Image 1 (cartoon, rainbow, N blue to C red):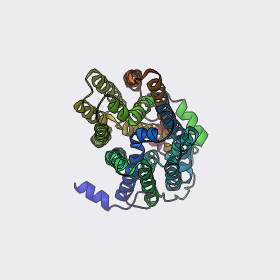
Image 2 (image 1 turned 90 degrees about the horizontal axis):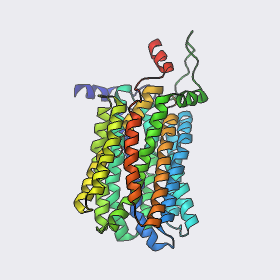
Image 3 (image 1 turned 135 degrees about the vertical axis):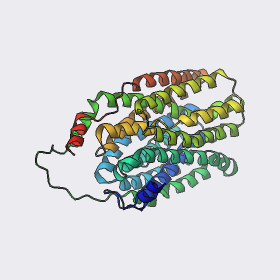
Image 4 (image 1 turned 135 degrees about the horizontal axis):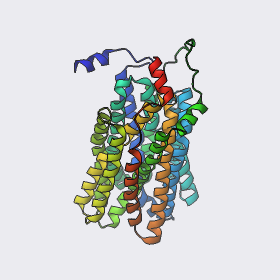
Length: 420
């Protein structure tokens, strides 16, 4: 306890204008407010389909494009954050995110809905997501505080999911989905003042040290990362996380309703995913400092497959839906602390936002493919069964892929550490 009190009284770390506790609190609030509205998007599917003259395949395609453009924009947003600072990028992203939500309320044709809810919203989220907060944490916090901060921030995003899922359901039932969308848009704009708590203090360039290696360039960083086998395996494994999360986020509520349960069971079960992910994310952040991160990831992916298998084998009842929400929540975003931690260990923090952005791009490609398949298969076969089974198979594959991911720095980082 005394160590934490002393740490809170210390001045800001070298790259931050604010104390450690302020940086963590602002990042957690950003995670909660940006992730909450996005995680509740599945609540809008049935109301949108009831109002506009298009089917579930259009909604699913727009959500798939949202995931894709979120992923495509992430490396660029990360590179801009590495170059110009996270706070500027987060501010721009909040404005685009809010605009995409607002315009979605009037998007009554397949094209306009795809452009607003898909492309514009995806680009806005890419520049206003917790991935950038993770990058800020990696730069602004001392090393001994990072893993737990990653877990706290991920848990905060999950708390946003817990708050916004029933809130969205209740607001839609009482006031309609368009009014709910406008409220969510206003919430996103509240992120702008929080973003400026993550402003970096511009460091004075130090004189080159005789015999020190030259500073790594952006291209050299990318070349190093994509020629490093553990990083490539880590990125490949992250595909599964996106596939599973996107499918459950967008289609779980509809799956529950079509299985004969009331709509409120679906959104409360999804709210349980959010609240129990608080526990899962914090435990993952804590365990990431206590055990090899690659084995932690393998356990998470394999456990997801077991939970999904049990859900499919049991009758769909309120109890099974709530149990799925609890167990899935424990594993939901718990992949983020060990994945981001491994990237930081491998390459350091200078290009962290960019390299995590490329990993997240593959995560979003998984989400894009999962949503495309879910929408097409639901319309053509009347069932989500194939997607559920693919989710199980991918979870097992990612568990195996992550086992050989070594938790050690690349040769350049090791040499720099030895020189220091």
